[in-house]
Image: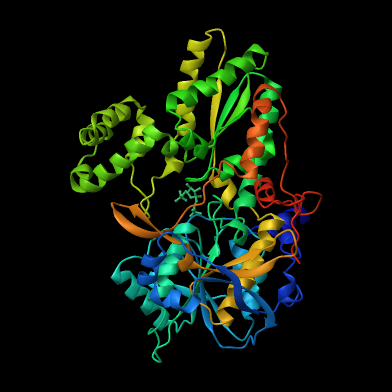
Length: 569
Ligand code: FBP
């Protein structure tokens, strides 16, 4: 065997030259944890801030033990370190869509729990918690997964734990593995799950009457789990948006080279447009749609299309028959007439489950459900192309969400823009390609920001467990000034929302705010980006080099940072 072939064989199974090198990348830790080579768990004390929502009274009734214990007060690190050797048995699981940095949460947890406690991984998310599929995580596992992307070490799923039977199954798992604590790494729905679990496992799980602690960790590439200065961003957002920005930058470079195509790019982000806004700030394309603005301005689909077509025509008249448009994945649900139609559609689907399921043909399904809608909504549904209708009728996820990643909104925008451009000026050529950038961005190797942030979130979650806390979400604040481990009481975040036709406690999604500095900056620049070629190509994410310490631009703007660089440690 040649020596090159031998070298190549050694790169199999997650041992590419890059993966081997990035495992050695040192990670900074918040000063509170002491040295980065031997981080120590910290104690917590109440900070001056108490959280609550419009539904606090109802939350207090539904989550009495959690609220009584925490008083919904935010916790901050108290400086003092804790005895590590407590013999605690802790399980960690990933929940929902993958996001870069999840592995480092596990690594931070394992390091801070040390050899005096045991860390278990739950296979395949909440479903694995129900089944009790746990295994012990070793130091060797940590050395192998550190700084690598994805959730593949454990796997994930979207099971919502809500029925009495499911709660009983979780208790069984806790008893079977003699667990003291569970760490749920997830987004808004999963952290809602964590809040519910914390209350349900508060007491009476073990023979001595004690409970099992539950701690959440804020993950989602969508960036819609944000709580002011307490949580400026969820992990995974930075890596995903930098991957998308590199790709959009490449497309911008291509389109201004080949001079003949428009590219309509749908970007992941189920509801909020944080991803689209961040990628627009990074790349400065001709058009970027922000769903929240469309909803605020109550823009119709026709007026959105007109707005896009006007840019196409104007650029063409200046000799630019090309450009890039960014559209958020969740756009369709924010267009007022579509939103109203989807709401009625959801109700109709929920009320006619058996009759609907009995139909096998898509056309028959559309006709059946159309007959259950009001005249306006039925007409709107009938006016949409079949590739949109089929996906609007597709199964919802277990949290009741429309699967927007499957809806080809980018194609709808292209088809309708083509029509409108022809009406505005038949001489304007319009050739367009559609793209969907989603799954490509969720599992890339974490940027240094996500790698360091998640490692510190893991250290924070482990510290909360050793400090005896339950019902909190770990956070790290002050990301441009060294970082402070803190904890957010989950019950303090809960609101009542109508889902599946009934009231449910949920953590509200943080949408793009029209008056946020990031949005304002975008608004101040977008007209110039529309008519000139001012795009920027941010290039690949760097692990060594000048952009290594860069924060997402929207996060830096919204937190009033003086520079784009994060500082942890
Ligand atoms: P989370 O909210 O669980 O982090 O997932 C976000 C997301 O990546 C969305 O952007 C996208 O709409 C959805 O997951 C896709 O879900 P799935 O992985 O089930 O196709």
